[in-house]
Each structure stands twice: as C-alpha cells, then as structure tokens.
Length: 407
Image 1 (cartoon, rainbow, N blue to C red):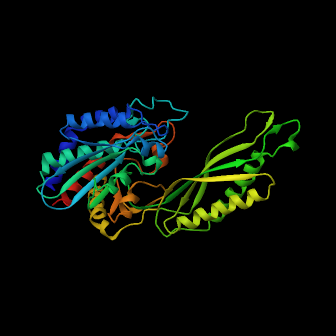
Image 2 (image 1 turned 135 degrees about the vertical axis):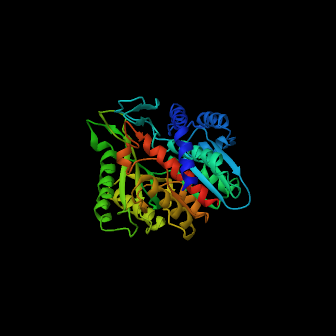
Image 3 (image 1 turned 90 degrees about the horizontal axis):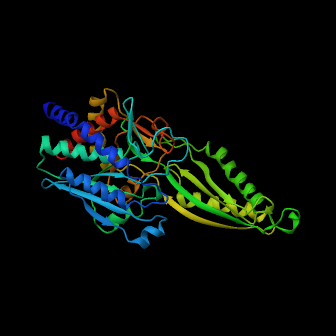
C-alpha cells in the first residue's frame, strides 16, 4: 500500500502540470474530417520531449492517408524498456469529429469551469494522452521498474477505422505488444464492443424541370423509399439481444444526406451515409449482404432508378481474449480502491481500435479517464467535458496497474 500511496502522491503533486498538458493538446484542432492531424502529432512530440518522453514519429505516406479520406497522419510511439519481460502498450487517439453547433465554450480552448475541462476531445480521447503519459512518469519516478516495457501509442485515425494507425503499425511490425490498454471511461473496464459498418448509398434518377416531373425520375422519392425500408430494420433489431453485458441490440442510423440541384428541379441524384452497429454475435459479412439486398430490392421497384453502394468502414466487434485477465484484475483492483466503488468489466456499444489488436491475438481492454457514460461527457456533442477528478483518479489507477503488470 505504501508503494501505491507514493504513486498517488506523485500524481497529485504534478496534477497541475498534467492539466496544462491536456489543455495544450486540446488547443491544436484535429477535426476528422478533414483529418489534417500531423501538426498535432508534432506538437504532442514536442510536449512529450519536454517531459523526457522521446517519441518515435511514423508519418504515413500521403497516398495511404488520402485513400482513407484524410489529409495527414503521423503516429507516435514512446518506448520505455526496463528489462526482460512483457510489453504493455497504452493507446489513445487524437482525431475527433468536428465540433458542430451549440457550443457555449471554445471547442479548442481547454477552458476549466466548476472542476471540468471543456473542449473537443477532452473526454474522447486526448485526455488519455495525458492519463497514460503521466501514469508512466509516476511509475518511473516512484516504482522504478526493472522488468518489462511500457509503450505509449498515440494515433490519429480512430474515427476512420484505424487503418493508418494501429493497423498500419501492426502490419509493419513497428509495434508488437503483449498486452494493450486503450482509451476509455474510468468507471468501467471494457472487454468487448460492437462492430460498425458504414456505407454510402447513392441513388441515381433523372433530372427534370419541376413543372414537368413525369419527364424525370425522382431520386429523392426513391431514396426515401430505401430509407423507410432500412429504418424498418431497427424494429427487427430490437428482437436480437446480445449476451454481452453492457451491449443491447444492433441498430442503424443515417447520419448524412445530400442531393438535388435546386428547388424547382426534380433531383437526379441523392446520397446518404449509414452507420450499422453490430453486436459481437453478428457476422459482418451477413449484415452487409442483408443491407445491400434491402437497398437493391427497394430500388428495383422504381423504374429508371439505379443505386451505387460503397462500403466506407468495416470495424469488427471486439471479443475478449482469455489473456486479458491480468489487465482486468489489476485495473479493477486499483480502480475499486481509488474510486471507492465496484468497477464492472463489461461491453460497450461503441467501437474502437482495440479490436485490431485482439484480431492480431493481443489481449486488450479499454480503460482511461472519463465519466460513467458517453452521454455524461457530451462526446461528439457540444460542450464536451471531462471532470478533472476523473482524470486524476484514472491516472492513479493506470500507474498502479502498470506497477503490478511489470512486477
């Protein structure tokens, strides 16, 4: 207990510095799209170096980045080798969705009010750049491990599937840890998560003057029919229940729609983008085939209409590997001591990069700073925020857990 208390004390003594570090990270935008994220990596590497954590930089070739719909990505790896033994990797992502409307705070300000920090990525997941970096600093200052290694991995493409982040690094052998902890919320240890299929559907008709609509083929009406057929699936999905605690059922969302040329023109082209969340028990191939069939069958009922369907993202579900037990046990033990309450291990309806490690046979869990729920944090909404006390406590939990895992 004395050893853990010393770790906690170091984190308390350096917490103001930790908060300032997170503020600096929030103040460099990483909106994805457009995904011009290399400047943030450069700033992060500079800040880490000032703390004695030298980062290896892995810029991804422009062609690979553009193919993923982004502009620039540089991945950062900080390696801390203490001796023989296993490597524990801590991964957080810096890319975020654009702020959107409705903010009462500067989304890039890192403002603090009533014990909370506001800003895009304050809770998902620039906060865990801070959690993990300061947990390692505390570990080295107090525990001074002599076995194993810790690696910090900071990536910038989680919103677009992780293909030029963790997947790119794993494929090239740049990282090959034994265990992985990834950014998450501090009130749960996440051991499983949903998969995600994203598709762009483009409905083609024939433009015409609105005064003579019969001379055209209305792509909007066809798109509406397809949308009705797709949304009807959500009623069916409620009857498909996952056996993973924390995950309920599949669902479908259409998040973007565009088309037409003017108010007085029958639209000849309409596009929309859909997001289908898949529970761990589902087969992604079968899910995609079903959606494509529904779209094609509905379009076929309208003469003159054709449809193009493009897969944008296929993120498989995360299924727990047996080897994740040391992670779960260490984090739960210390989180219960630090938070003073039971910390569950369960699934989440989100999807993350951790699945890529699990697919490579590397056991992992999701744990980091944040509230009990996505809703509470305002993640992907206006006024995203992080309670600073959650940041402090999660940092203590990670530092304590690392000391156990490397013992």
